[in-house]
Image 1 (cartoon, one colour):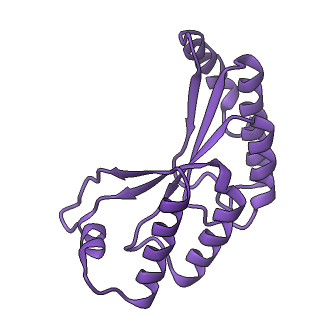
Image 2 (cartoon, rainbow, N blue to C red; image 1 turned 90 degrees about the horizontal axis):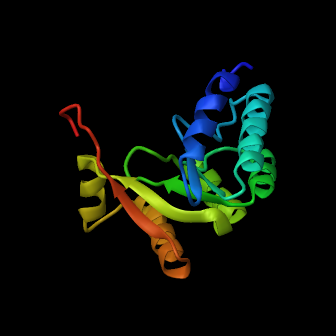
Amino acid sequence: DILNLNNIRKTVYEEIDKINGKAIIKIYGGEIFADFVTDEYYNELRNFLLDIKKYKKDVEFVFITNLVHTKVNRWIELISALENVNLSVSFDLNGRFTEVSFDIFSKNWLHYEKYIKDIMIVMSKSNILSFMNETHSAFEQKMIDFLIDKLKNQEICLNFTDYVSNGDE
């Protein structure tokens, strides 16, 4: 029990028991799909989430991810096993992507497309200014075109999230 999930299992089940309808479990914090997550951690999390699914049949799992990872198969396997999964994808014009990471992001979009339900954009000063600029670098324009294409071709909610500034943003 590396992640200490056995200690929180009872609390999670108690909270789930208070819900009359569907339980929604959000999994986020850092980058949950990151490649540095070891197989041991992944397997522990996988078993914990599958146990929740067995405990509460009417449950939806929501993962928040930036889609920048290469170990796609293990997450697709877990999502398929959990069945009722939605993804909330982080997307920012400023500071999130390099050419390489955006390439990984856009390829992974195809793997996860049917699970993506919303795109989260942090409303930092730099992001707002990037979207408001009339001219963009070729890379920024590529990201904007990708975002517009996905929004017009899928039922996806664009979710602007607030941002607590350190004063510079």
